[in-house]
Length: 245
Ligand code: SAH
Image (cartoon, rainbow, N blue to C red; front, side, top):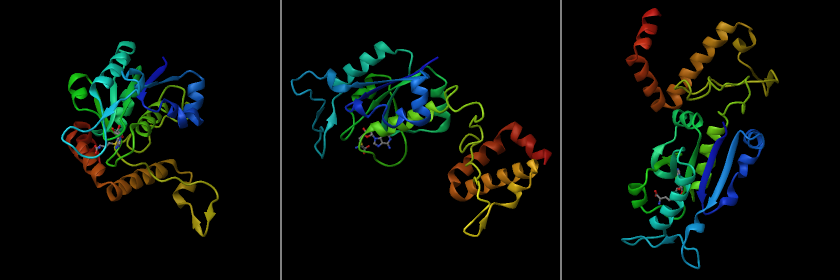
């Protein structure tokens, strides 16, 4: 199955952009995913192909019009009724690895990229659109956010990362940050690789990695740690694990 990405944007030339290179670029060339970036202005009705207007209630900037976007979105829905329709927005639910996994397991995604001050709210009332944020900061447009979301999905598609690397251990997959990595040279600026990683003792290495993942998560991301601990205490299998210790 080919994962299809349909993007609605004022800057279709920004796609595939960085996703035309490296892992995602090779996967694109191999037909493992498809990238179809569409110009929102094609659905404008005036000579100047206007898509925005001044904010109701006043204030700075411009707002993307619901009527123009409605037409653009309807054309995508007609073409791709099978894929979820997302809109990149700082007002959406923050993207996480679980959502990325569920999107990557499906037939693809359609993404609306905002610009200016954002999108007329009535569009979200009138159509089934999932607003998605990539973090608590403001970008100048939804394109970089869409590229980020797509990159996260594409690397999970079958055959993209290769069998050697399933990604199962990675940060967030376990609810924890991943343990830190080291490679040659064995000594650099007087710093050595932790002894246990050179011991060849696989059980000791696994224990060290687990402990570092837990310590680093607790220190760097108390929010993740709290959720991880909460889930462990609540789940019956977690409770069983605790008793076995
Ligand atoms: N005035 C808006 C920000 C608009 S930024 C506000 O304060 O909420 C312009 C566009 O950039 C948005 O419509 C959205 O598509 C995109 N964007 C900005 N920050 C984003 C984020 N953190 N996640 C996803 N999209 C974002």
